[in-house]
Image 1 (cartoon, protein in one colour):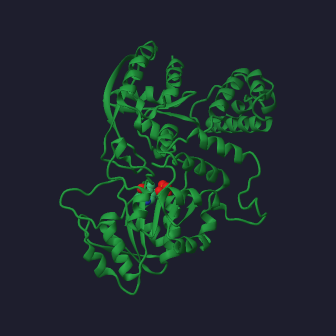
Image 2 (cartoon, helix red, strand yellow):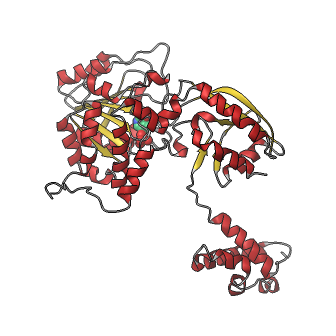
Length: 461
Ligand SMILES: *Cc1c(COP(=O)(O)O)cnc(C)c1O
């Protein structure tokens, strides 16, 4: 065995071979050396553990193999994806794509210094959230606002600042889990507030809240059941009733609405999605929502509501731990700016544009793309099919959105193999598999990306 190990070329010898020389043009030499060492270590342990002698290729062939391996190893894990799943708020795919205005503002602020906590008029220190607070007030009708890292953070901070060591009353029907790592009871526990569950899974009445109120009560919490519905023999207490009850007992009402719709999504065929302004109008003391769900902005958690509660929240030590950076603030501000005119929002915010594209447009694009895709050697046939999809990302699971898909079947091999190949391409494409066919859903593909879709397939053969 040791004689086989001796046949392995040295790092220096390998680095002189053209395939590895070429790589040092784009990767730092030290990085290439690390990779070569790593590869050789693996090869040595294979030789040592193999029962039969492993043939060691010559230096040139080995260098070629290592170069190919380095190229694969160096593919970044975070890459742009062409979302052909049809799910518009796919958490795995980073939720909402941003408006061009937001991207531009983020680039501009990221590139240099900015007046993050400096009031340029007075030269005095200012509050970083001033970048977005006036717009949030204007758009939602709230007295004040705060922004943190995400809605989980907004919930944690709000409960900590408003109700630590007190009881927070929540209906059993609203103890949500949003993806494995967010469970309301766990967030509540971390905040130091005590969960007081009331009612049953399917019915919680106003009297259940009222009976639970005692000297230990710190707040009433309503949570939007954004990723499930309780239907049939069910009853929930209205926000109006909760607000009246809170006022009677001088308790704040916190409304976690989840998705943060700034406009009425009824116009997009989605009902029952609470709007931020609607909740404020009802009298909720604090309303919590995500920035990257239906709002269509960067990842953040937004808290709007009564001035004295927001002050308490912004003074809490967790505020500093959860604060957003200047780039997020710039993106959020630019996104909110678009909402000052609902038509502009619809045209400029990609999520709203995708959602509001008429089915006939998707159909036309699909009919145009189908014959071009059919020319690709990797696929056997293409059909244009009508289908339904969902918003995703913990929003509205039951409301179907009409869509149009290109349904393709592979020329060779399985549909899973085709899907894997597409994910690994230069332009990573993620579709959805249904009954041995790969569906490419145009609902989540912007018209400007159609060319990329064709290119991704052309690159397969
Ligand atoms: C999505 C969601 C959350 C979590 O929000 P993140 O921004 O993902 O942290 C919390 N509550 C509700 C009701 C949600 O829908």
